[in-house]
View (cartoon, rainbow, N blue to C red):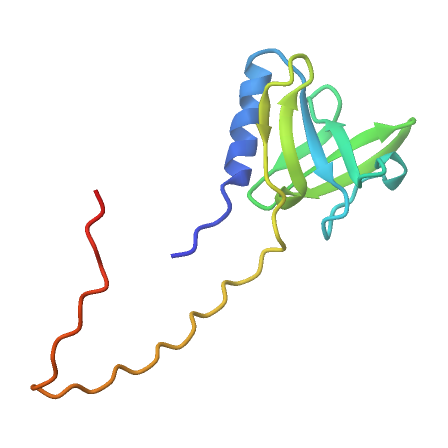
Length: 138
């Protein structure tokens, strides 16, 4: 069974934990992930940008299971930012660095269908049973 990404749930929990501890939440973003909208002139040479997402720094903040979006000022200019959850590499408190980092996500694609199972050979009653393939591991 395929489950949805746990990243948005961790993001929301860590965001609230940072705010509850009177700290300033920052996110580290991979600006090259598809559909990421951040001010490119502030992206570093590694393709990343660190964003302050505290309520005092942003307007119209919204976070759901697919993305984080908000308005923020850069050099006095208001920008609309849209960051897919898969583009967020970490969330942490500016004051002490506590938070959570994430592994980069591969582009989410539907799971590949399992390879076809080769048909079992037909056995006659006289065939010797094969040794079982499973073992008890202690």
